[in-house]
Image (tube, rainbow, N blue to C red; front, side):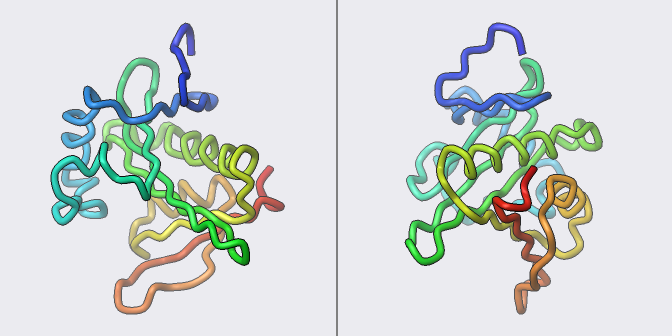
Length: 163
């Protein structure tokens, strides 16, 4: 990825994940506003500043080369009896089908398993969001159940199943 500085960032094979910066917000909001993303990811109820001001979630801008390609975020459950993390991702529709989402999810999963010592990662998505389901399945996530009343699919990945 050349000379990109990775202060607090993570390098994948084709993407770099770096903490969201204020300069990233306009492009990320543009990506979220595209019909292909907004049908799954509507931040309307999150309030102003949610991209930068949420201490319960860690967010990264996904970079493909020098281009902002999307956003990936995670939250953690720190209960000693069930320590795990959850991932959410959105990607610029112009970049779908290039493996960038798979690389971003895999890069973040590696970080959560290796650096944060999680044993399980979950993803919740609409059961009809075939793109997200294929992306996560390509990394190794498996369906484990449905979310009642929301037509949502829960997938998870165990550290022992992650190559």
